[in-house]
Length: 201
Image (cartoon, rainbow, N blue to C red; front, top):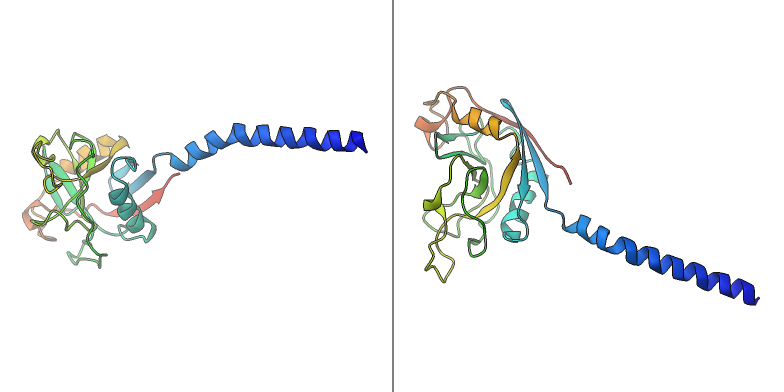
């Protein structure tokens, strides 16, 4: 009986040790930065999202990804040397339904540097929904103002392109004046379609 109890305690200690050993790795896996792949008619690129500095913005974006919102939409605004923009407009120029807007989250977000993905918004800084853009250059004019103590300025960068920036650059070189969407002069002549979006981890 004593031997049985000793063995049971020994196995319990081993189990506890293994659990303690695995817990940090499991936690790290759960907290790993989400990665998302965009499959487009011009090729694929991969984003790594910054949940640490823009948690609400990232979760909003992932919600649209999970719902398949972006699939079949197009890059409807291309400004060479500045941004490419997409979100809710199909090749026919018609918008898709969106959720309620989210609050601006620029207090701790990184700068709008080349390759950063950023939420677009209107005159109201708390009006971002599903529209996003990718910076083609270091666009410091889009960053939060240094003296902004109320989180009312700038645009929230919430991740960056980690693979396929050459595809983003190729999209930026597309012939324009496609006449589609809210920026008809900046729309590519041939629609550049987001075919599929998947969360990798």
